[in-house]
Image (tube, rainbow, N blue to C red; front, side, top):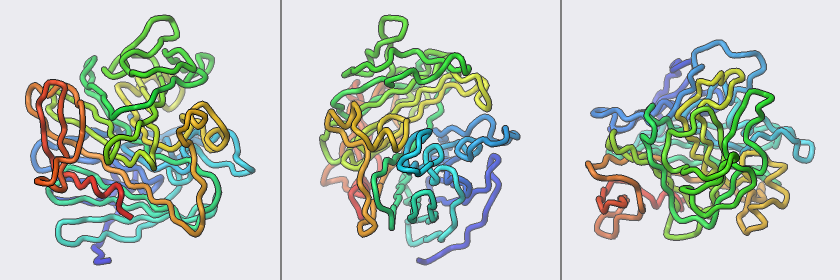
Length: 387
């Protein structure tokens, strides 16, 4: 590669590497490989949609996994989930070594309008190699993320774990998504009151719309309008329905005049786990202060439980949605993913669709609102299918 020098910097409590373009500045932590802070439209409005945990610069309790001491932005999970139960004598940490252990710098490749930071990890719980590539393109308010899993065999769950911070105002953001087959609430309560955690949704419920999800106390709630339900932590999974060249998630921040979005190949990341975190955890390090947060987690996994539960038959796999893959040392697994923001005009209320902008605008996507307002922004969606 045409490598440039990369200096490590201490950023909000974590030693990090920076990659930047004309429009985006992004940091990746050496410990755990978490991506944040990220600044989109960095020379003008400086939009920062990702969370950095409120304890980022504090001294945390001994024994806390690096997943939590580093917690911020987005990170790649292999295997995805808590992994409390060992899988065939493999005891993975929560969300895997890729979300906890130290990454090594391969280099920063800067050619013309493209800037690619490459990191590498040699995993030991399941022996293999994982490469992390974060690419920024001048003029694009987007992150092009690629993870390549090499020399690894056997069943595996995986996923991205983007954590979005909402303004502290009820209903400040509106979440929407591409078509789904169905959704499910967690099969058991997401939190245990005896341990200082509280959840609000009725367990083990199938639904077809996030605007009408059963509550444990009776009635329904709308999960698309957030912040809401202060004092509770909830987790649901939605299963994507194949349609178009990619699946998407979006949060419209109408007052702030931008949309945060993610794009994925639904054949690679067939589900989205929503972690709705609004002050429902009262144990350390959360202490009731982790509020107005939504994890938009695009995965191949059975909820947030781990490899053991994802590898065996479960409610999602029985419904035809794969919750793990079988890796082969002879064939790498490549997971491509795009996150970005699009600036929107007044009256743009909720994302109804995200599609390629068409042959006259290659390398662009078009966002259409319920109100009919449209925005076209530069995003190379073809990256999702690239090798």
